[in-house]
Amino acid sequence: MENTTDPSKRYLSSEYLEKNPSWDIDDSPWKADQVMQILSDNSIQPRSIVEVGCGAGGVLASLRAKNPSALMVGYDIAPAASTFWPQHAAMNIDYYVGDFLVLNRLRYDVVLLLDVIEHLTDPYIFLVKLREQGGLFVFHIPLDLSSFSVLRETPLLHVRDKVGHIHYFTKGLALAPRVLRI
Image (cartoon, rainbow, N blue to C red; front, side):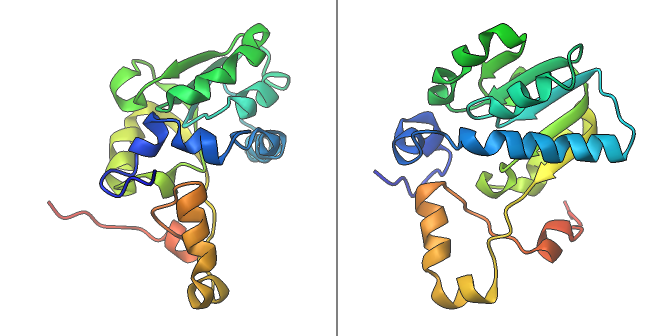
C-alpha cells in the first residue's frame, strides 16, 4: 500500500492508522511534559496553543490540566486521527481535520510541531509560511541519523515505512540555518 509519489497520501488514507493503531498516543504525556518544561523555563504562560499535526490529540489533552484557561486547538491532515478526538471531548479542545496553513485564521502564542517536520516534503517552505502564525514555536524532531542507522540502513527504512519519515536529522542538521535563494 506504500505510496511513492506523494508522501502525504498515507495520512489521507487509512495507511498510517493501519501501521500505527494507537497513533502513538502513549507518548503524549512525555511530550506534554517536555513542552511544559520549555514553557516553564522561559516563564511563558500562553493564552493560546495550537498543535499542527496533533494526531490523536493526546498532547493537547495532557497540556490542558496545566493550562486550564488557554485556547487549545489541534490540526491534522489525517481524517483517521479524528477517531481519537472524542475521548478528549470534555477538555474544551478544538480539533480540525485539514491543512493548518489553509484553514487557520488565528495567531497563537505557542505553536507546537511535535514529530511533524520529518514528514513534510519541503519543511523549509512550510516553516516560512508558518512563521506568521505564532509567537513561540516548539519542535520535537526525531534524530534518526547516526553512524549506526546509516551503516545498517534498516532503521531508516523502518521509520520510513512505519511512520513515514521522509527526512532524517541529526541535532546539527535540525538546528542548521538554511538560506533560501529565490
